[in-house]
Image 1 (cartoon, rainbow, N blue to C red):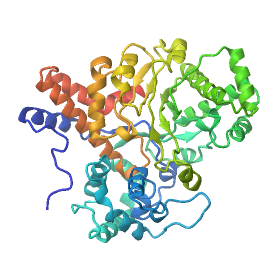
Image 2 (cartoon, rainbow, N blue to C red):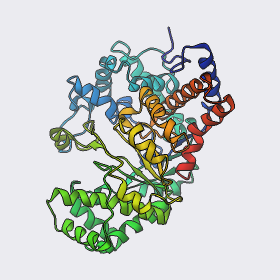
Image 3 (tube, helix red, strand yellow):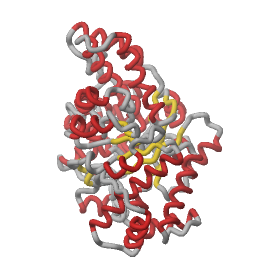
Image 4 (tube, rainbow, N blue to C red):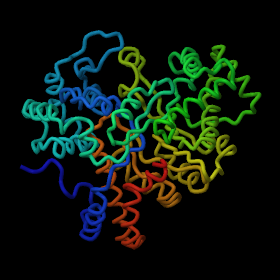
Length: 469
């Protein structure tokens, strides 16, 4: 029976580029994983308990999986996705797994299949493709392994050769799981990142109460502009104390503002009074990106901007299941005009790093590469989310390298909640980058020694440098 993953996966078929890609990959495939931005649960590393059944680990929390199944008529309730009101959903892990296995063919040609086959083969030692007929055998194998101590979170962290991983917590999080990790004496490096969306976006559910809570936990008067900004500074300092090197901002657009202090204060007052003017609410989000950039200039946190997603596009799914349930849809995104107020304020700061992500690939060559190719503060984040795929990664390199080069990018980050897939995602990125570099060498656009140096940078060093890890 053929292996689930071919040793020449994603490499070119021509002899010389293939040989070069293999050599480059061999030099980086075992490098430690630096995961500077993601959404794994710090509770896993704090408690180090056995993971639940295979479905709860690999299917239920993974929106890449359940959104595809939902698109083909499978109910989220039947996949065990929890409802907000607590109404019943499937809780039998074996039944959920069987449903997934019956529909696994839907993922043919997708990055999800690449990642999942990698997990089956390399983590669980399974060489039989997932199908309805194999569902129970796979389930039993994985369930048995998950009960072993060497499949607990900390053991897998070490087995995956993770040097450091960043989780992402909201501004109101108590960081208790990070405290527990620190107090446990375990040497694995797990850091947090500051995500203030709930207290900077007036359209975020419960915004006003969230800002009140921000004041309560910081002792700052968040009824005033100055007190509100001080509350952010205090929380950022606490997050830094738990290893944070970055903040993260998931705004609908990349729009920024550069208001005077007086104008910003007046805008804040209107927002706190509950303004229903969409222009004011949009301007407040824009101004807060610039305020966060100014704070980053002062405290050294990297500023990550993840714009351009229409979050919770289906109101029914949002009201029934909540956020992050597969209905965040990419939109067209402007950067040149949208970022100019922020760049006028801090764009020439050499000690500030603002990492830009996009779901709008048309902006790579037209906007992001030219911007990052000249502004000292800007770097381009890797292909993200819907484009975190072999073709998406190739397009990213092809459209950004000519103008921004390699060194205005930041390596790879997996941006995932699916802990077992982290090695698979990094492996795909390393393979794609090695294939790209091999092509440049074959076309005499790079020397082979340069390609070997770049392979190390893209797989490991650039992320450490950019995120100050």
